[in-house]
Image (tube, rainbow over all chains, first blue to last red; front, side, top):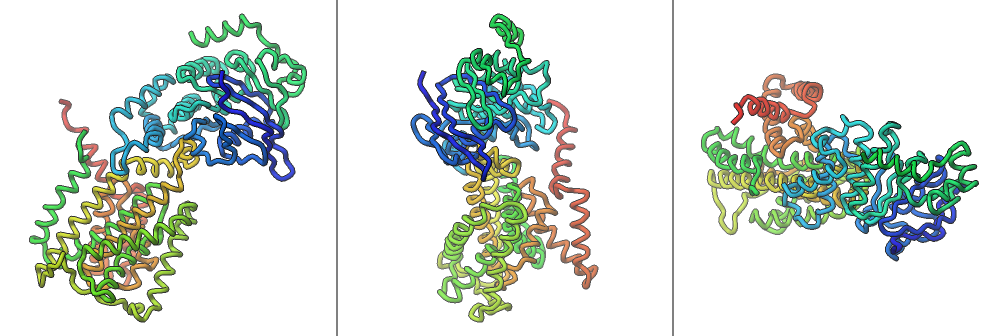
Length: 266
Length: 320
């Protein structure tokens, strides 16, 4: 597998507060990675630095070998790194379809003149295809303000896939989704994303989801990486159990994890 | 795919209607229609900025630049050809808006409104204190010529009216196209969620800058047409009361369609005439009351009434 993103010695400080310290991560193409850590551990700071929302205090972020640290968000998006948000960032007074059409318009704007209508049948069809990939096509004509949180999350993620990124960050994709729906929600999501061959890094607090959907796991603690490796190994790491997930968490056997995935997909 | 949408066809149909009105309506009303078209373009400029959530309280700046370019071209350089005047006005506007846009594109909400107002008031102050340009009295403009042809009397008025109608409707069609195009969609998204626009890969600053320049150009065209129609320019064109009037028109008419500010301008002109006639000393109260009622009962403006009417009409049509 080829490395698409590599961070070297990434640091972020806010005055005296160290939000991220010596973050060294490499991500391969089409990889699925789960990120865990308590609030304030530096997970979102890391995502914000890589996606251009925050400028690192020091260190390098190499995307396909090019240092993108401090570049504007839009340029990083155009290069192929996209994200979704913990609180979905949508166009709330518009319909789901209109949200997708705006995302597609932005992605294809270079191909059309200023006075050429942005939306045509081909673009609408493409938007509907994306919605059906995420199984939310029946909500196409609904206003965002009328949707349940889980559907909003899916719209948010569907929009993030429009620029066809090679790396996608999902910030707590299941927050606000009910406990019973989380597994099927995640299964829908990972199915839709794997069809695009996108590397996915998702921040999650639910360890069952991490076990079920992330072959690799990175644990953050107080702005540093506590552990990085295959998910089973990370979740069994004594330091991770002590500082991140708590000793009461019991990892499921591999066969149980497969069962959960099958149930969710079924 | 159809080349023109319904709005654009309606604007095209409006041209012969306006030309017929020129010969049917009394002169005073023709003058109101003509003046309204010039002002309507500035209201249209305010409306497209409102689509991005930006309220310009200084659109009079470009209205004034357009008007004074027309006046100064004839006063200082002896240019009366209207097409040359338009070219000069557009270039001057693009330069001013291009430079100011770098500052204004960074601001939103009240900060954008106040900055646009401040810049406009600087021009107002400069013109008011300039004796060469007639100070607060302004100065007169000669009649326009058209590629060497200089019509006289009623022909001059009719020619200018027809040119005003053509340019106003052409600008409205182009703006409708612009709003349906990629940048039009992006500015709508900026109003809703600027952060997301950036995360989808577009620059909100660049889009606002382009929008500001487009709005400036059509305001300047409106300024030239208005000044040519009245034959006089004053610094009042850049005053905040004039800019406030354009905002008033958009609130009254709504932002739903490019037609709305054009019709809204005419309605305001007629409303003002009757308000002055009914109550010469307190006519502003009547306008204020109309504005309050519009905000309370028609938050999306008069255009929403028309849209509702069309919807009801189409729902009554039997299914095919």
